[in-house]
Image (cartoon, rainbow, N blue to C red; front, side, top):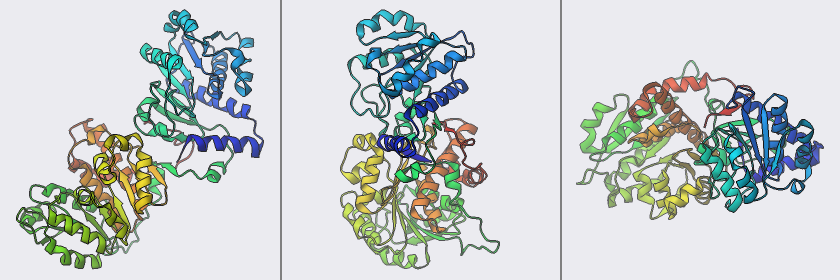
Length: 531
């Protein structure tokens, strides 16, 4: 499912109108009618006596709101339109729809300034539901003065709010509020979801997201070629192929995991066993030799490989040749979980990366080992998947965590393109960025995953898929979706907190089967995603 920027959506509208001759007023009618249907299916009060208010700006977003007011009036609702400008300031298609309100006896209250706003506050407080049609997807600067006060007033009312296209005040490309923003219970957007709808905090401000078909002709989106996707069960399912009847473990990939140090055996065990749980045929786990007795009892389905260690119980630089030799018959290397950042380990990580002969998944301490010298990434001849959390990403880029979080897609995409690597930027709405600039956003996962070991499980899943022959891009997408989907199932089953990383690991096969059995992606099957 495409995710589009505000500029890409404007271009699709333009081509629809200019190349196909579909009037903008038709698109506005379709938008308002579709949004009304979504409103009725979600948060609209059942009683027709309830008071609904449309608060509208002067642009096309306001025009969509006028269309909604007309349909709601025809359905018997008591609708009032509050216009945040004078009527003569509204132009184009929006003006045409504004003119249709009077014949239907829909009350129109012009509120171009604070004086008019203050005069109508009492009546506004008695409305039961608000339709937000103030500002659209083109907003990039902070909301100030009058519009800021209107938005904050509506939020303070704590009444249900339904936003048209996007919550007013939300940046459609970054998901960041432009100073202040409507807190919507639900949002109907048009043609395609926007990036700001699915990135946090935009996902929370958007509420339940509905995507409305407004009649953009087939092929328009493909001609624009958006470089962002929202992962869905269908988009993940297509990467999985049935195994042939004569498949054996030699056909399903052999993974080398280099992980663990004294006190961090769990990271090594979870990485290895998560790869097994997602279908890797064979897993060899290389660990500091003193940890072998422990891990042989923890990873029953994986083979252990004890290698030389330092006096601190971390990987020694002397195990380089052993590990390079092990790559000869492997399909993937997972490097980093729990290995520590001693000088010898740093040295080992750099040399392993430069001499790697199979795709690499680099995580956790593996990332920390290269944080001061990311140039090593440009010396690697095999595909690399990095799986940083925001703090690790900040160390890799030299930015602050706040900068990373303020533009997660931009940060991940820029790094992936600069270093020709695949970046899985973990967190709420994990971002997967490819070297060619394509990006995917993962809608699965929940706050219950904020516990130790979740990243180790994800590393094992991605590496296990790579070992089975998935491309780095598809392994990253499938891995994060399956990981979060499984945690979501656990959250529903056992509660929002208290399930552990090993619970996610154990449940992976069952939840993968549910994804593979999910319905096809059609407008009827996937009209919205509860974000």
